[in-house]
Amino acid sequence: GNSVTQMEGPVTLSEEAFLTINCTYTATGYPSLFWYVQYPGEGLQLLLKATKADDKGSNKGFEATYRKETTSFHLEKGSVQVSDSAVYFCALSDRSNAGNMLTFGGGTRLMVKP
Amino acid sequence: DTGVSQNPRHKITKRGQNVTFRCDPISEHNRLYWYRQTLGQGPEFLTYFQNEAQLEKSRLLSDRFSAERPKGSFSTLEIQRTEQGDSAMYLCASSSGGVYGYTFGSGTRLTVV
Image (cartoon, rainbow over all chains, first blue to last red; front, side, top):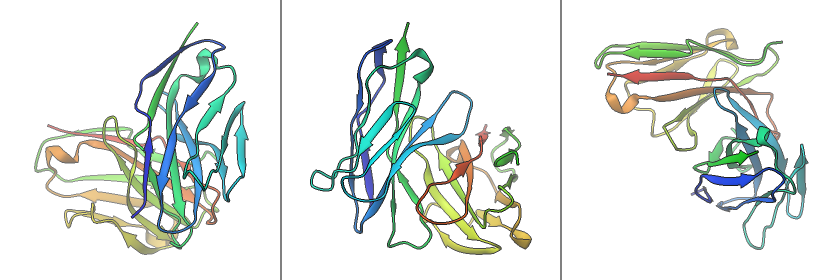
């Protein structure tokens, strides 16, 4: 079956520090990969996506590269801000499934201190 | 367009009672999904609709759970004879298909006491 594993949090960083949140996946087919972010009290928001190997998704200074050889999709940001404090979820959608259901990792809480 | 709307935001119920949640998707989206998120975990798929047809259900969706989407517009998720293990955030999402991700609502938090 499909599964997503991401590093456990919380991850605590000082403002302007470099961020990496690791994500690896197992999929029976050829998945699309996503990062979602959940701010306190809000729903999940799509942060970025990649649909094929070596694609780089990027948004708001965050980046992630689809690495098929290592089955990974690590999230990075060069300089975090206090406003980036949230829970980040890695997810995949198996395109062999017509419904495009998402399989999520367990989430990683990021706390950025001023 | 105000995005995906879910009501109520919070629900506290006694064990054994029935509860119903509502989701109003983005109007032009033909797909609607329900997910459940327990504390400290990622969301887990429950079921999805394309228009009014319920096309897939997870094994997580026991026979106490039922979902409908009459006329392919809003959807309801009912839980009968609630149990403490049903306490979770219930998330609704909609999409127009494809691999571009969904738009999620803010969720309904259910607490069974």
